[in-house]
Amino acid sequence: MSSYTLIDGKQTAEALLVEIEKKIINLKKQNITPGLAVVLVGNDKASETYVRSKVAMSERLGIKSIHKELSVEISEDELLSEIESLNADDSVHGILVQLPLPAHIDTEKVLNAIDYQKDVDGFHTLNAGALSKGLESTIPCTPLGSIILLKRYLGDLSGKNAVVIGRSNIVGKPVGQLLLKNNCTVTYAHSRTKDLPAVCRQADIIIAAIGKPEFVGSDFVKEGAVIIDVGINAVQKEDSDGNSKRRLVGDVDFNAVCDKCSAITPVPGGVGPMTIACLMYNCLYCASMIHNVDFEMSDDLRA
Ligand code: NDP
Image (tube, rainbow, N blue to C red; front, side, top):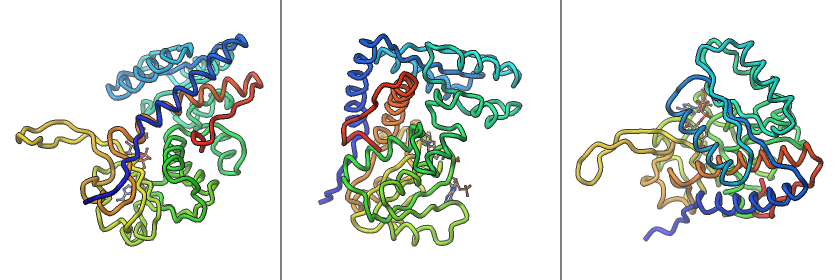
């Protein structure tokens, strides 16, 4: 019989949201209402869905939500001036530009145009640099959520061997920085890594952020490892009646690895709910920093 723990992202996200909501009520008593601006360029269906859920979550928590829908044909200069006006708006504490942006717009330029104090995604070069130096910064939402989950289920991470598969600026690199901050011995693996399964078999912790459905198989996993599956991939799969259905799967082949590992996040229901909760966390963090209010989360809800 298998004895792995299912790391429940929905439950931890809910605990985080409850704490955030209480802190927002306290901020409001000081006449501070956190405001989050979400900027969507174009009409990519997946982006529209993400934006809708971010706006709905802001509203649930009492965060003032500003939603800008801009034409796919907007020029870079026009987008930059939209951001400038949000930077100057005192009712806005967090600005998120939904990615990807259309090809004619320089994404890096746009992300760096956001006031770093309002950078709820943690993608500004100043925040990325601060994180890598171990300084105070906003932390990208998915890495933040992944580490909160890990620590909640594993406790102290000191001395653990962690392998991060993926080195993107959005997930892989920052998640590795956070593991390092928590005293793990960190290996970054990527598409040029030789004998990836052998590298991963050294790991007490595997973070899979690859973008390839069910890529991590049983030969990647040593007995007792803990797996955080960041991947979200839509695939067509047959259900028990033989009908083909669209389903979400992770970067890890859950059924192949679950009996080998000691704990694993499901997809959906693992890192996904943590990402949106951490966006709210970052909005609260930015509002607190801007207004010089103490920001302290419970011990089991910190990265
Ligand atoms: P990117 O495409 O930016 O990065 C993928 C990384 O995986 C790259 O570093 C790449 O290596 C590496 N990689 C690709 N193929 C292989 C391979 N065959 N062997 C080893 N490494 C490989 O993706 P993201 O970081 O943005 O996202 C990763 C996953 O996380 C995706 O499934 C995405 O949908 C999901 N995601 C989930 C979120 C959530 O809320 N749960 C939020 C954000 C992302 P190289 O650098 O060498 O090309």
